Length: 119
Length: 110
Image (cartoon, rainbow over all chains, first blue to last red; front, side, top):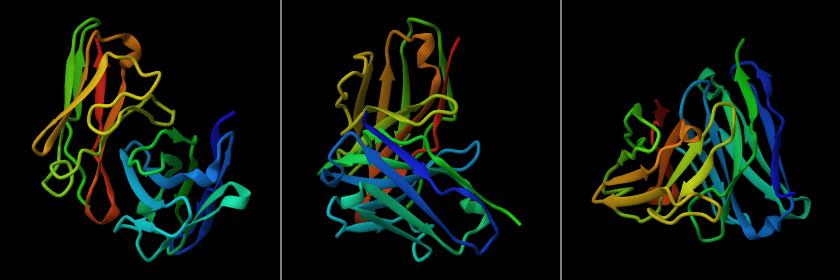
């Protein structure tokens, strides 16, 4: 089955860190560009970060630049997001989303993992 | 990286057509034919219904169509059905490799 499964979310104190993971299956992971998109409770979608299929090109939203780090391991069919210096406004469901190579849209989404930043 | 502007809500009756607008700037919607639209039902992951302004992915009903004029993109849903009731988000490529989403539009099918 073609799917993306996120994990690693949880409750963390302000200033803390987490490593989110996204396991891909059912397709050739190394052929796709990947993104993280988040959604705060009851709010809209916010793009967070992009990584190219070979991992050489990376982009971040201004709101997370310098605090979040995206990476991937094509041998393990996995995408990661290291989130650090967390703030209350980072509380959200974090989705990983696949983008076909050379395209700028998301054709496959995971179910998301919830990150809650609170003391 | 500013959010695109969408109406907070729209509504229509079964069988009718509705249009959701998505207004950006000359740095995003106006400069690139890279607007996509996503449907999200409560508690579910989003699903793409339109990409590259007007292209429909395989499996998406032809009742969904997209267009763009200057800095504004639009999603039209014709022949409204109860299952179309959901939140809809536009998204555009912006300069410097970033992407911007709209604030979302809640569609109610009366």
